[in-house]
Image (cartoon, rainbow, N blue to C red; front, top):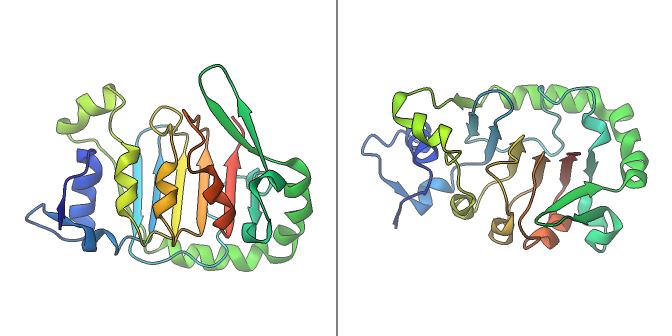
Length: 212
C-alpha cells in the first residue's frame, strides 16, 4: 500500500536510502528501517540505518552526561511510576528519569561501557546522514515544519529512535503504541502536549531522557 508522509524531507530521505527512484513509498518498504536519529541542536540532521542497533547502545555523539540520563532493562519494572517522573506544566508535560534509578544502573557503564561502545561504533558505520540544505526545504525549516510525529507510526519494525533537541518538532509520542519492535528510545529536550503513549516506555530495553 502506497503512503504519503506529512514530512516531505523525511519522505525524500527515505526514498534515497531505499533507492526508490520513482519516489513512491509503501508500508512494506518502511519496515526495512531499523534506526532513526533526528537532531536539531545546530542544523537539522537525519540519520537512518537498515541495520538494527546492538542490544546495548552508546552512540559516539552522546557526550559525558549520557550515563546520567539512561537506564537499561526497562522491562524489569512493573510500571512507569518506578522509573519515571511526569511533570505537568501549564500547557505541556516533561519527562524525567528518577535519579535513584539512574544511579543504581550506573555500574553498567563502569563494567560494560568499553564493549558497548565498540559494538555501537561498528553499527554506526551503517548510518546514512541527511541534511535539508536544498532550497526546496528552506520554507519548511523556517516554519519549523520539517517533521511530523504522525509519520513515525509507519516504522513498525523500528528498533532504535533518537530525538535530539526536538522541543519544537516533537510534541507527542502516541506513535509508540504501534512500534512494537522498538527497543531503544532517546528523548532530548522534548516537551509533550499529552502523555498518550507514555505507558509504552516500560516495554523498552534502553531509555534515555535528557533533562530540559
